[in-house]
Image (cartoon, rainbow, N blue to C red; front, side, top):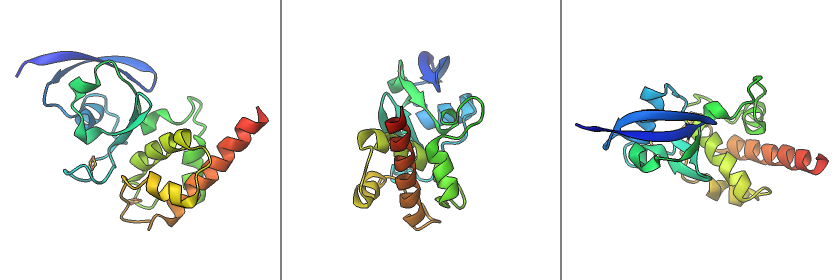
Length: 163
Ligand code: FES
Ligand code: FES
């Protein structure tokens, strides 16, 4: 099958890739770019383990063809920490609040939470629960994920107030 050239910006780096029309974005990320943080937990667009941030929206990358993302600016979980290794506030908060166990949902959960806190920097518990309702976790029971997102929101808001 013929391939097409697609240009993406991934975690700040321009990437030019050759892809078949049918190639799903999650497969391009994992198999061509070796960004294997985003996971595949279903084939029905429910689980959200494949969630990435694409042009300012949370997108389930299993439900988008890479050719549809041509020109997009994408952040994956690998792009969240600082280049010096300092964790993003969400990553740190997930660790401190035990918001992960097996870790399989975590990249998608963190990418969704990242966008959620930009949509709503000071969410209530209910807003967090609705806000991550496209992301399934089989391990945590969600409670500590909610706490982690609340904690990261506080950290980010305090940092912003201090600036
Ligand atoms: S892999 Fe389950 S929603 Fe994408
Ligand atoms: S930590 Fe295992 S699925 Fe969420």
